[in-house]
Image 1 (spheres, rainbow, N blue to C red):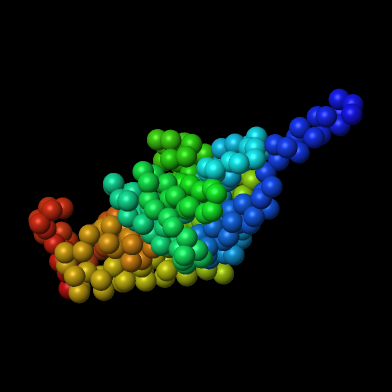
Image 2 (cartoon, rainbow, N blue to C red; image 1 turned 30 degrees about the horizontal axis):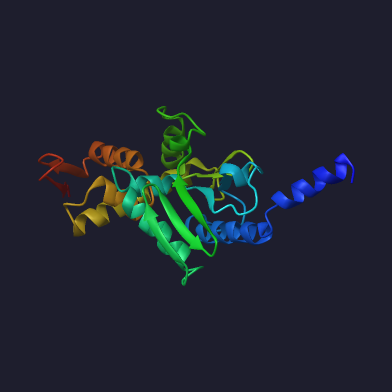
Length: 243
């Protein structure tokens, strides 16, 4: 046996025999999360295989595999301010719809899925927290705010061989119709406040699927139009609709 054959045999002895099964499960986890957060069936978009498996340096008998799933901005808005455990619980519950009989748990900042002979650790992250965009800048936030101001629609961010930003418009660039969209958003805000004067900006953002900054901008306009005022402070206060 020559050196070339010996080396090929060496590599074969290190090869992962169940690579196709592992890749399939990576894809299924990605698919169920994309269904939940992105309304798509893609088995590859918005996820990264990281660690030794993702770098193609893993060898036979690997037991711990790592995966990153990049969440949309709206999810960050729902789970910011120390709600990491609630986010992990939601991600775990979502994955369980695909693998209901598989043992899984939240552990720190990951969801651990225990398959036979190996486990996959899924880390749900956001672009700026992962370092794909500025760590402390406001670039992404500004894009979202301006889009919401323009036509009330939140752009979508996804990772597929790079950062993609998708803008959805109301089939019109007519300024009058864009204004009507913003007016309807304010009407919805007033409707929610009329039933719950104690509602918070975060609750309004969650209900209307806008950012908190977007809600603050809409409320500022309502105040300028003398349609809404705040009685009391942020804590203990309430909204009053002006007739």
